[in-house]
Amino acid sequence: MKKVLFHAHELDDWSKVIASARNALADLVNVDIVILGNGPAVQIVSHPDIASKAEPLLEKGVTFELCGHALAAQELTQEQAEAIHFTYVPSGVVELIARQEDGYAYIRA
Image (cartoon, rainbow, N blue to C red; front, side):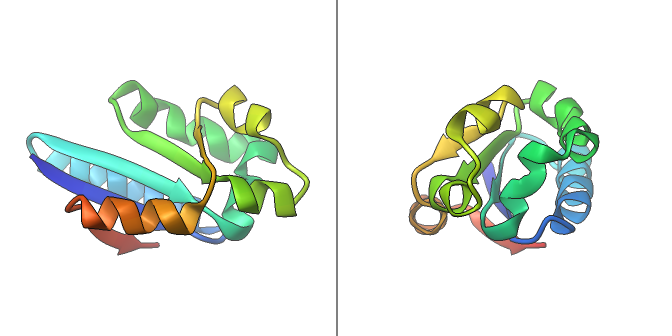
């Protein structure tokens, strides 16, 4: 199985990351895709117009994760992340390291 980790750091990165993940799903067979947001990208929880674009990918098994440190720094919550069906991870940096150690290809928006 191919494994890909897309990284969104800025709020504006989401459209690029979502499009790239959609293309990967269309072009690859047997692929595990994780999209991690940290830094200002976690503001997606306050932007339903952007978050709604993730829904088709969520339905296809793509995992969306948001950094807990970044959420807290921007006075956002784990509950807000989970309300849009994103997974809360305590540390985005640690998650990036762990996923790369597990063999995920890393792609930054």
